Image (cartoon, rainbow, N blue to C red):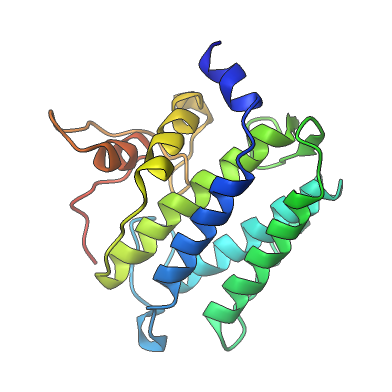
Amino acid sequence: MDLLNELLTTDFRPLDRKAVDLYLSVVAQVKPDALRLPTPCPDWTLHGLLRHQVSQDEGFAAAARGEGARLSAWRGGDLGDDPLAAARASADLVTEAFAAVALDARLALPEVRDGGAFPAALAISFHFVDLVVHAWDVAASIGAAWEPAGELVEASLKVAAIVPEEGRGPGDSFAPSVPSPAGAEQRDRLLTLLGRDPSWRS
């Protein structure tokens, strides 16, 4: 079985829920005065990054409901006065939507490649990687620890490996890859594969 077929037949929902927990554990450490900090995503402050993930959660949830084709479904994230509460609410929303969708359903992802439909199994894997890497983005911005379980790193590496370089954009979760030092740990290899410098600090 090749890698793509393996991903298409994998239920990423349990891993996605673990990635939610990882992400929220880091967001819980963000102080209000940190929201203006820069992040490894050059287009976003920490406020912008957190808002982006809320928007992504809402977009993936809309896609799972068959309503994801409109770009506006992916642009409405709002942190309000409590970024952690907003992150929890959007995570609950997308987790509930994923739980109700068949893995062979077709989900419209207008921000990916030409905006075509993707099998739900693959779409959920993209959301999973979003959470894992954006947890690092947040952690690096505030100087917090990022300690994903090995299974999260290994699964993320598989998903990242199937996304061609031409489908990646600066600031995206799947940013163009950068060189990885020889002998780098798996999680550092994941970061470089997704366009991050593991040594980046705010």
